[in-house]
Structure formats: C-alpha cells, structure tokens
Image 1 (cartoon, helix red, strand yellow):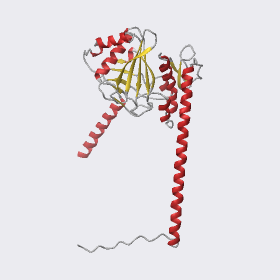
Image 2 (cartoon, rainbow, N blue to C red):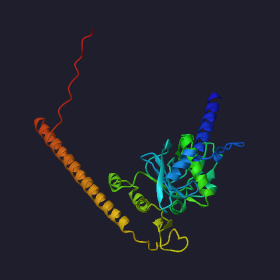
Image 3 (cartoon, one colour):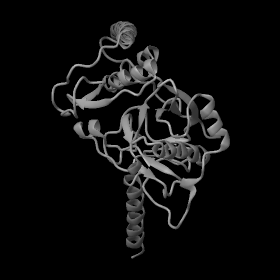
Image 4 (cartoon, one colour):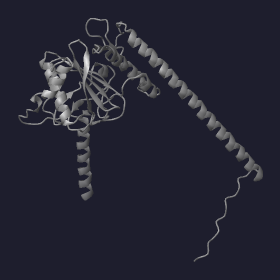
Length: 325
C-alpha cells in the first residue's frame, strides 16, 4: 500500500512538472496591479529625445542568444532606426537553433510581429509580451508551441527572461510605441550576431540553411536601419518581396528588390563558408590518415607477435600466490 501511494504521488509530481513545461511562460496575476502603466522614467524620455526619437515612435527589438542580449531600436527623425539600449538577457531555454515542437524547451528564432493583443500586462512573470510563435513560417514548417514570451522574473521555460527592471522599461517602450499610433513592432531573434565569421564557426551546423535565410533580414536591417517587410513562400522567409498582399507560404517566391550591399555580404558569407568547409575537409582527411596509419602500425606489431608465438597469442601471465602475512 505504501509503495502504491508513493507511485501515485510521483506520477502527480511528474504530471505537474510536464504541465509547467508545456505551458511555457503562461500565467496571470490577479487583482488590479498597475505595473504595466508605470510611466517611462525622465531619463529614458530624455535619452530618446537626444537621439532624435520619442516614446511614441516605432521600435524594433533584436535578440541574440549566444551574446544573451536584447536590443531596442527606435525610429528617429531621419526615418531610420537607431540603437536606443542593449539589455542583458537573464536566461533562455535550450541551445542555439530554432524551436521545433511543443515541450522541447527551445526558445524560438526568426522574425515576429508584435501587436497590442500580444502584450501580457498581468503576467505571473512580472510583465511580458508574447512573441507570436508559431508565426507563418513556423506553421508552414510544422513547428508547434505556445506562450513563448519575453518576460521578467529571470526564469525561462522556452522564453526570453529579463530582469524585472529591464522588462518594465522594455514593456513601457512597447506600450508607448502603440500609443503613438504604431499598429505593431518587429522582433528579430538570432542565434548570434550574424557576421560571415560567426556563420563560418557553424559551417557544419544542421541549422545553417535556416540561419542563412534569416541573415538576409539581419543584413537588410543592419545596412539600411529600416525593418524589412517579411513574409513566407516556398516554406522560407522572404524579405521586401515585390508583391501585393500576403503570400502563399508553400507557393513559389516572387522577386525581391535587389540590394547590392546585401549581395556583397552574401558573397562574403559564401567565401567564408567555403574556406571553413575546406578546413573541415582537410582536417577530416588528416584524421582519417592518422587513423589508417595507427591501424597499420597496430597490424604490423600484431603480425610480429604472431611470429614469436607460432601464430598463437601469447599465454596470459599466471598469477603468483602471495604468502599470507
């Protein structure tokens, strides 16, 4: 009876743990908490004005997993976006690479559009906004998951967790952006800063094709300082497509506006990856040669041993009894 009780108790604990994992970062606080309406500090407003922006201007968020950083960019009077502030990420779940399925504890990567309906002012994790995963790309590729947030409380189950102070500021900036008449803002999530050198470090990674796809969006924003319009076709991201209206995620992709600077970066990526693959191939050949020589040497000495033992293995040494002390 005692064993049965403990088995049932363990089952309850496991189910509770699984439900927490599957729920990701869902949860709401009760009552009339007003933390989501706390005004931006005078220092933040002053810093925005100093860069030629204001709380109501458009914004873009970029997230980098490897560097554990979240950037907030704001539209300036020039029409381009400038980096306002970089926040340290407390925690995220999983490894470098996109999220594939519910419960895999991976934090997502890709391009996401945040609307007011995705804001979560009553989150159990201080404050939060939902990334909108799965987006059009994720759904087209059969990826599943829910409640993937950027939130406070410094804890992560598939989400990007910030300090409460950092999240309060990020949430306030998003709130004021919506108040300024912007219907949405873009969140770009990357495994690392997308340089040719960083791609080359992961030349053999299974996610390289996906990363090269989203790097096009990274390059467009990095070079032009304007968030690229994104959509999905051929089950991949497309940026600044020359088309009117939404695309069929599985249909052929339309042309895109050419960008000479992005094309130059893609050529540099190709060269860096070709060099990396060359090094990988040479190293593999060297390792194979060393292994082959080792096998040949081992075989040589094995044959020599056979000569001295008449083709038989040498008998194992006989243990000698030690006199009792």
